[in-house]
Amino acid sequence: MANANTITRGQFWGTALVCAVVLTSANLVVARLTRQTVSRRILADAVNSGAAQTIALGNSLVRSGFNAEEFAAAQQSSGVQSAALNMAMGASTPAEHLLLLRAALRADDHARVLLYGFYDFQLTEPVLFTFGDMIGNHDLLYYDEPEFARRYYSMSRYDAAGFEITRHLPLLAERGAVWAKVEQLRRAISQQGMPKQATNQFGRVADFTLLEADSQDEFVKHCQRASNEQLNAPVLEIIREAQERQLRVVFVLMPLPPKHVQTFYETRAWQEYQRHLHELLAKQNVVAVDASHWFPDAHKFGDALHLNEEGAKEFSQRLGALCGNLHPSNLCSGVRAYK
Image (cartoon, rainbow, N blue to C red):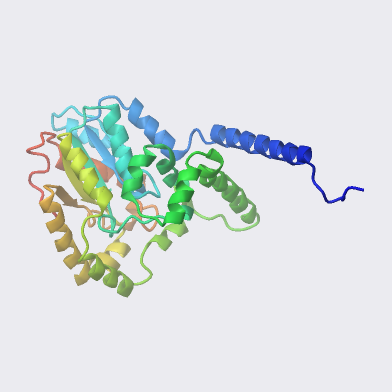
């Protein structure tokens, strides 16, 4: 009598076929449900933008703080006809910013100015990834020039193999988008009967305090380390590609709430790091604007890092007026890198 635990060849292949059908169906469903992820919507903005003379890049500080319409209006009030495009993306690194810039330049050759907003150590911090990091908005790396992007972030051999497999499977590549929906449901359930927590377009307001240094001492030590570092590889490539296309490159240290400025940016270590950064940017022929102290009023911010709608409008108007002349030789010509 045949062993009851024996699996016949037909049963094995039947099971394999069912698994293949389930995984294929799941991939198709996930691919359909994630057609409008944040990174895909921003890539679509580049295609549909028309003739934008100014491209803004950066993370969520720029996404929330740069109002393209107000910036362009401020320039037009000076007699300059222009349009601007906000290609910034929340929860992103310079590696994604490089890909977004390339997408914008492929879509339109009218750009004459690149505004790159940053804060803290974004320009010198090495861009390091593990396989587990590549979720959320980092999914851009999976499907927009993955072979090119692979040069600009570092990972172990194991993580690199995982990346190569994952970028071909939407079920894995878009796992962050699926998890986000699950997390939103979990948070909604956990809030039942509890005081409502403040949120904005990027999530819970309280979460952004976690992105700051734990203490001033920790921040000072980070400044001391960073003062010996160079601009990271994707930042250098952003500058190179923009200048190769004859764009004037302007780096903007973004406005931050007075608490962040007073705790971290008024330390001697931060000023020393700024001098180091000034030297690095000057070597690249990059104009730099220090806007970190522009808003001493905390009411212009929606959380521990981001400008609110009122602050974004005022910041964009002021920056547009400051950089009103789009001619590459004159743009922000009166501005020197940092104070």
